[in-house]
Length: 113
Image (cartoon, rainbow, N blue to C red):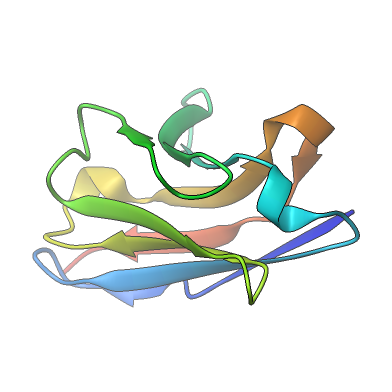
């Protein structure tokens, strides 16, 4: 099982980024997927979750209306579109499959002017 995130970087407040997580080693289309984040000095928190077919999503209150989780089961990839980014969104973002206890290596998102 492997999860590889990409798409992080430095962005100004109000800007956008799209994270990707490429999955391999398991039947991706049968598992729900999650995005977590961890800021310096804080606990890891769930940002967004999506069901196996993509029909249902859940968001943390802090990102609701700004972030969108989606997936492409044909490409074994889950995405996190992040809009109207704020400095408090700065964190390492991790892709996760809870059922398999699988985590990616993380990708750093820095929101700063």
